[in-house]
Image (cartoon, rainbow, N blue to C red; front, side):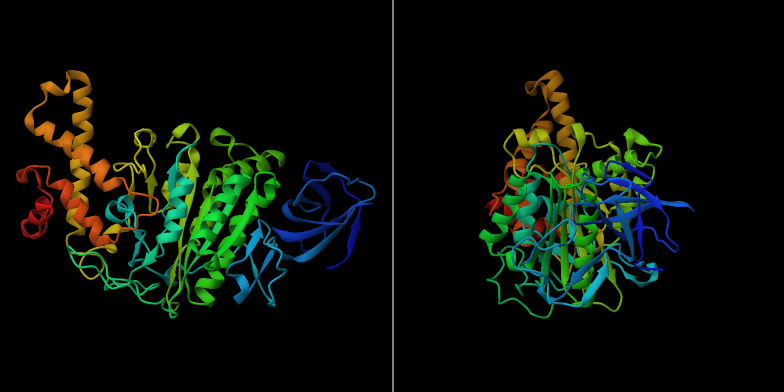
Amino acid sequence: MRGIEYRGLTRIEGPVVITARSRNVGYNEVVAVYGRDEGRRLGRVVDMSEDWAAIQIFGNSTGLSADDSRVEFLGKPMELRVGPGLLGRIFNGLGEPIDGYGNIFSSTTLDVNGLPINPFARAYPRDFIQTGISAIDGMTTLIRGQKLPIFSGNGLPHNRLAAQIVRQAKILNRSGMSLNEGAEPSSPTEPSSPSKPSSPAEPFVIIFCAMGVKYDVARFFLDDFERSGVLSNVVVFLSLADAPSLERLVAPRCALTAAEYLAYEKNMHVLVVMTDMTNYCEALREVSSIRGEVPSRKGYPGYLYSDLASLYERAGKIKGSSGSITQIPILSMPNDDISHPIPDLSGYITEGQIVLDRELSQRGVYPPVAGLPSLSRLMKDGIGPGMTREDHKDVSSQLFAAYSKVKQVRNLASIIGEEELSEGDKCYLKFGERFEQIFLTQGENENRDIGRTLDLGWKVLSELPREELLRVNQEFIERYLEPAAAK
């Protein structure tokens, strides 16, 4: 029977309390715990047997006693109140408003754990998202409905990169027109024409979720959103570093629930930026340790893969809905180790990754996107004629191949010296420098359309002899290379 209070707790272990089990208790069910002097504290069921239930409290258990505490099983999972007033609002990790404007005026609530999606109902992602960043648009293209994480390290500018993507991202349809701003497609050699007024038919909004970040990081994003004027199209979920561990586990689920409402109920295109997934996984490991579970790799629970998949797989497009959810999770790799369990498992679930390179960052390259380990597995289906430009695939392939050769030549030069290199190898060294300084490097406020990005790609490829351009069509060489070399 729901609503009946049970007096007394069996055990209290940090934020986890053990109590006698009510009938029909469900996993992840919301529970209210009352202490003698404290008010109501919410928690959720994290484990159970035939006779007892383990409840993790959203906060700490200070002030609770085994004899005087009361427990009420509320008979429902944790829910988020959603409605048209979501945009422009700031919530904590539990989905409670913290911007001073009160609750959303809506009677609609959704389970934060989401609903299962029939795989047959998913639509294949194909539409190009222009971020305005050459390293991403040209070589690691983001597609609408894709999940493309950023693998970074401590001290690298992943926050600046994420903020720039939020400011500049535009969804392009298959004719090269911006859906959210109505920009005309760029010609092969000319920049895009001025943007038309925003299209009300297919709006583009941002869900930003911060987990376990410091206050200055959260303030950076909020100030950037406000300064750039995008805050009215952003929904923010903040779980700061001093928040309870369980709040960090709930925050991304609240954010994705809001994204699903806007995408599938309001037919909006939603870009979800989540930082930092490493803090999320650390909280998961902490909760697992408190529950006494057997640890797996580096102390993380054995279900880390399936838990991350329950978040990442909420991205995508569904047949019958014009909305979509695109995810950019940010992972800070401990010790820059890409084989660490968090980036390793994320790479299996997601469709590629953008890897930031510390050496490039130390040389002053921004954004320091490492060309070779970065990839987008859906790129091939979102570029080409009618989507970006007919030479996009060839330019990207040739830049990858040439930059791979640059790495080999640099290793050779470190052994025998640059003076002993052949003339061909010296051309590759010069190409590598110009690729990093012209193609990769761009200002935080520099927004390049795809035409400009590909033109810069041809410009740096002009440093190589034509006989080395084996991955590009001869027709494209005559059409694009000669004008680029003449500039």
